[in-house]
Length: 227
Image 1 (cartoon, rainbow, N blue to C red):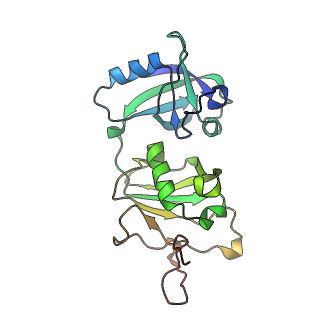
Image 2 (cartoon, helix red, strand yellow; image 1 turned 90 degrees about the vertical axis):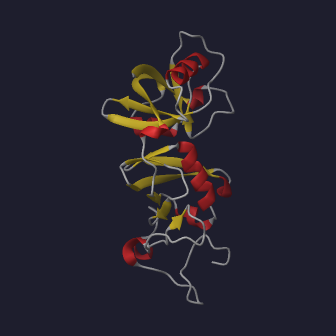
Image 3 (tube, helix red, strand yellow; image 1 turned 45 degrees about the vertical axis):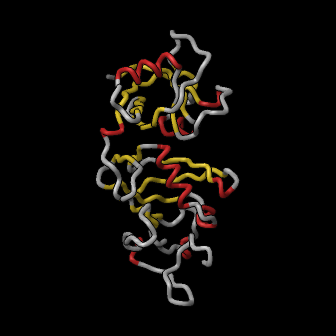
């Protein structure tokens, strides 16, 4: 069931517990939504403003609000995606259970900043995607990387399988990284795919059909300690 809520940037709240990867509502709204979806393990908000749409997982409620207030707080980076300023614009919000989305089997991301490849951030990014909950092909997400001191890097969601919108969690997800958006044209080379599978499990082919080799003949991997 869809409802109308006012969108506010998280910049307007002084709650340090607010998560960059989720949306938040008042305790009254939180109780109402969770009571209406008692079997849902996790709730995802489908947020629509005009012809723009964004999916965000529901986080913990923001306190000190009255029952008459109906704000939906979002991380500031979400406002660009929705084309709003985050100052009370009205949106149509539909609450969906995470079970409504197929589990991802393959995700391809393109970082906007090649600094991402300078740190071992694979496991951290996997955790970040799980916190986001749902990924949609064609969207751009903004993720703070702890290995870079909290520096925020944007990622274009290039491919999601088996559907255009997937649940980004599980042990069977192959994760691949396309060439960083800021990489010089002459330096564009494919990056070996990374996977949420155990190290011994097979992963997809190298993007673009190219590969880089170490002096001992092993495939180059930006996340190996000895690379």
